[in-house]
Length: 277
Length: 208
Image (cartoon, rainbow over all chains, first blue to last red):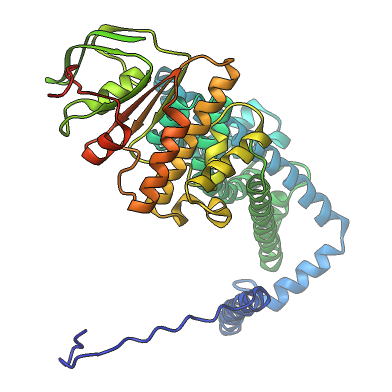
């Protein structure tokens, strides 16, 4: 091999890299995550210090202190619980509807042509328009679930339909040649083929579910909700409260994402563990 | 007896098969001819994977097996799972037979637990061969005996001499006995010499 300087490298020595143990890898991840968190929290604290006004930018200490105090009140748990239920209902219904529509429109071109305008309209319409319209149609308590459902459905639908249509034709032909019935084909060809993209769309939709669900709560103000608390923080210029409630939403969203990831991991490892026909 | 009469197939304006007349009884047939002559097209039509433009086929048995030119294994399943998953019948019995067949084809226990991406091309090919054999055996068993049609598209392509010999012996043991019809698609004179049988071409005429 010739190097840049023209010298000939006569031999190359390969040594197997030592693999870290699982515990060391986990510890490394924790340290790395802590370092990243410390960097951003530090930057936030510095900016807050420089701004010098809690009204404009409260410090992370003030925000987390407020969050801890709020955690001691029943109001936080009630609001969080109800918001969580509303968003989960909308998300689950949207995921189910999106999955069903994807299967139907991938299977039938006619169904796709018929349903396509509906998907396009839902995607193009501003969320605020839907929220305001929904205020006329349904009780305020149900609007966040409805809005989340509307936003989640087309994301799952689009992504899963594309994945289904991109399933390897050669494997499908093999399944047909070896007499796989519809159930066996779905389980052993379609599901493993689309699962990566499906999970990714579920996670993307989850982030949007929280954003749109909270936005709907702020605009339609259901009785007890995180959205109402955010709205009140804005009205009374309680920036620390605003940050504390927002932090809570971020924590809930991340926890729900971790839960979905863990469920998927458990499901897929269970399948690999010999749940075949 | 499988009878093919007046079979034609074209793609666009490109005629692949024209008024093909062919009879296949029990035994071994080597379907040969130059690339693009329609061997795979004929095989796919016989297996029901493709429709002919015109013509008639009669006498296709209840069990039809097609080993594709490429392995077409499920990437998320192990070699052993790929073999037994495709077969009808009892899962445990199929798994045991799949392991036994793969061992005969030179895939040890460790290889049987590997996924296709971890196997060499030749190992994947032999896994696909075991899948075709087990499927045929099981399907014939379930239908209570009866005849079968097995079409193997270049089953020995790319195998080294040792594994090639084992695979050829395996094919003879598993497929070449009546009441089945075995069609081997091949370009190789060595394959033709190995398997014997009647030589046919996609034009339907015995090769001169």
